[in-house]
Image (cartoon, rainbow, N blue to C red; front, side, top):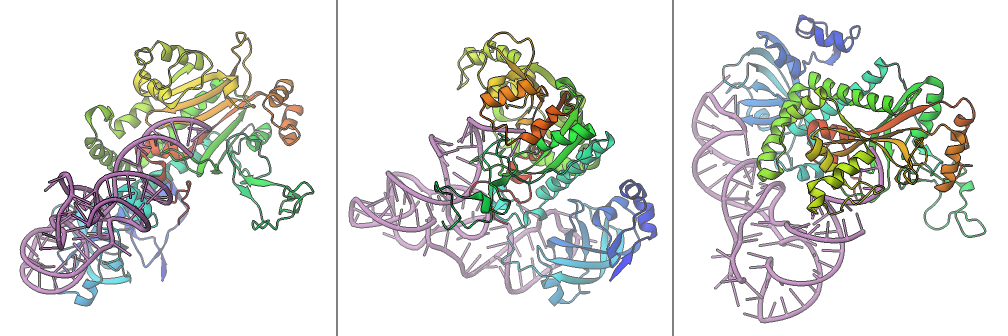
Length: 512
RNA sequence: UCCUCCUUAGCUCAGUUGGUUAGAGCAUCUGACUGUUAAUCAGAGGGUCGCCCGUUCAAGUCGGGCAGGGGGAGCCA
């Protein structure tokens, strides 16, 4: 049965919370259920209520630690001895889902302020203790990844995914406040010219060799669902640019797919990316926005998910203790986040970065696997890490890369030294994660853009619609892509990107 | 894809120079206890030592191949 909640408890306890979230909306809740977060936050006692959740542990045949995912803290449900059937008590096992009704009282024991003295306990869902894999103990992240459907029920993943939610909400909040239009760019794309990586093919043609063929033996995609060859998107940027040429400022936030055989702690085959695109912005405006954006969403999580972040910080600290001294990070998670929010990102050009690297003792002592010998090389991750983690010790915005190592759509810098053509590119490097943002001012000059496309063998005829923006009312504009999971990694301190997305997709893995 | 390390009970791990019935903690089950905080105490059950092939009188242990996982690199967000 469903009731409309408008009890005293709710209005007094959490009016600030409610009015912030959704002032005119009432919560409809199953049987007057109270969320455990609300219960614990209020610290009020001597009233009747009902809680529902999953049993974390059942101690002493009497004390149930119950969690409903609203917070990592459990409510202690007390089943007084002799008041409940042995048959019910036997079914209160780790993982079981129960409903408990009773009085909230000031706890008689230590360790919690209030507890629920149960008058009735109902088993909503049994959990076979011999088969349920989660135990009230520490599990390895690798093991939990194999049971990703259950890992939400652990403290670590509870905290990670509540923080992920907060960050996602803050993304929309930030851009909405700045009057950006949220644009849904297509997931299926006909263009394979985006240049961001290998793509997953989308087709309804049979794969058993009976697909219709052209005279030359190649597959006849005219017979395919879309009448042409299609793939999953690797970026919404090109479509984003089209909309920015109308709304001035837009952003996308959706899934992105790369069929690269990447097996690392910071790559996924399916990940979420945020791509703002702004008309009338140059490279500096772009960097300013990216820095403000990152700081805003981190601050949002710090303000709204303090408990979860503190839990993750503590978890990380314990993990750090296992490492040898020289591998430990200097700052704790909270200090790191505070530092990022309160300090300016370092901004240097690619050319300056090369000078710093070339002159570094690290390079002179040949400690880099790839020695920095001169202008024009692509930076290896060891170089990026040196700049971010050793030299500046803060996020770094690297700009104006050589044109040769960057994408066709990036704006060519004017007045470059001969042989040193650069583009208005910008990468933001974060400590521990590496590249978190990649962006640029876009080449709006038709002649320069088409010449560059020719040089890089990008088929102009396929991108006629993209080039139309340069034909009709072109303007200086810029944008960037931010890898959402990498940001979640940075904020939660999780080392593996597979642990910050609910059901990770990567080579040889698409379970769940 | 490359380099490197790992795979022993449900989980985390130990297992000596190759040697006879492969261990521990936690979890599970049984019992005791009852204001516990990953409850405690006693007892019990639980193993194709990732898979295949080889060396050997004898392989968890040595060699090869395969699979899965971790870390690093490349590709990138």
